[in-house]
Length: 186
Image (cartoon, rainbow, N blue to C red; front, side):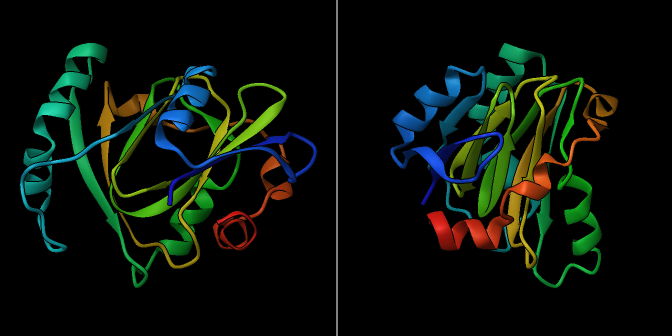
């Protein structure tokens, strides 16, 4: 289940909670974050390769490329037995920004985006079918969990635009990781 919770930047207890996709999209739009639900009419299988996945969502990808000037799209998959999963997880657990959009469409699995554009933290549990676009310059972090299982389409305007610029803040340490979030809010 996709969930959005909104918190003070100083405390985890949520003061807003949304589970309806249209309400999530409306609330995130207020902070400049695009959130959509995508469907495909082509059958995909768990073992579908990147080419099949990109083709299945080709119309939606082309629409975003046209609107925002994305030059490329790829598919990344991280499974629970991925040998470098902990190093990859740690890379995204600190608050950072990018000079480009961070656009992710969840083909499968789930992940937790933490957005910190103002004096609140917006936590979005994204699952299969969810697209989230974090604007350039937005402070955020991401948790794929201790045993990640996700398949995600990524869109880029330039490869170098996705380089993380860490803020040096310890705010991410004050909020629960994916597993604890699921226990408390899921």
